[in-house]
Amino acid sequence: MRSKFIKAISLAAVMALAAGCSNKAEPVKAEPPSSNNNVNLTEKEVKPIEAEEPKEQVKPLPLDSLAKKYKAKTPKQWGERVDGIKISLNTTDKVIALTFDACGGAGSNGYDEELISFLVEQQIPATLFINYRWIDANKDTFMKLSSNPLFEIENHGYQHKPLSMNGKSVYGIKGTKDAAEIMEEVLLNTEKIEKLTGRKPRFFRPGTAYGDEVAVSLVRELGQEVVGYNVLGDAGATYNKNQIRESCLKAMPGSIILLHMNHPEKQTFEGIKLVIPELKQKGFKFVKLSAYELK
Ligand SMILES: [Zn+2]
Image (cartoon, rainbow, N blue to C red; front, side, top):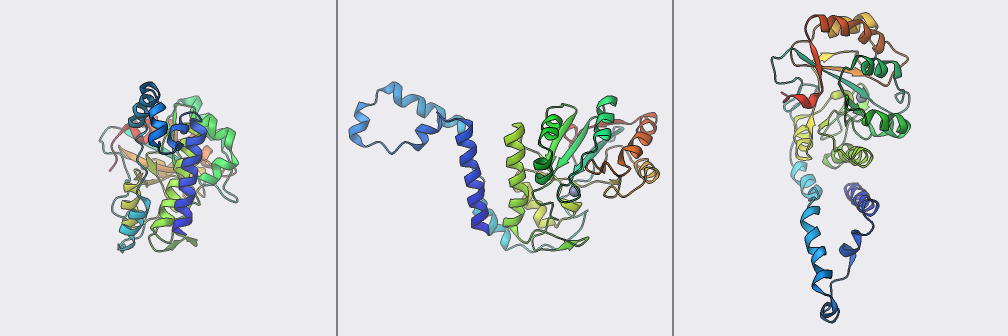
């Protein structure tokens, strides 16, 4: 499984390279020069190749050694508030970060256009945690969202699995079974988002927002912060508009509110429409996660 995944990642990286720069790829592929051929190369021909190398110093992540390092670690915690998960902005400013998940998969690929249009209309910034499968099901919408500076696109995983080192489950959803599967969950969607938008996600929210503390530190080594919430905005889009309102009114300075943008048939939009004016009236402003340090 591990080698299959790592092969998949390397293959994707090779494909990205090939797609990105067909000409530049040539010098990399060139055979080691034999002494005979080398004599014929002018300095001009050699130099550009050397000059390009420092620019492309994107070090591949040491996936194999990370998998080995983490194999030996046993988690002690399991939940939404384990060590390392960020649940609020580190500030006393009267700001709130609205985060909307798009979970993807059967029954979860919907798009709440009314909700997003409302945010755009009101110029309310938000962070969107988007799953790999949702992107596939909503490619045009995804591209539109990612080009709107009001929003930042973050990582909601590949298969929407809870973030476990050893296959723990929650709500009947089986978590990742080991370090390799965690890397798959994080990196396949990272690559997808980066390829489509040119920007690498900085934040990762696991499916169900559950994790263990060892898995969380592994994700950090992969370059992303694991982000939960401290206000349960719509409870997986199950709350009605009044419950959403009541819940969001509990927000404190620096709160991260967890909501959903993939259930237009539910009441998330109605709840948001109800509560945003009240929060504004209380003096709150809305910001993206990246606007502050997290804690
Ligand atoms: Zn989700």
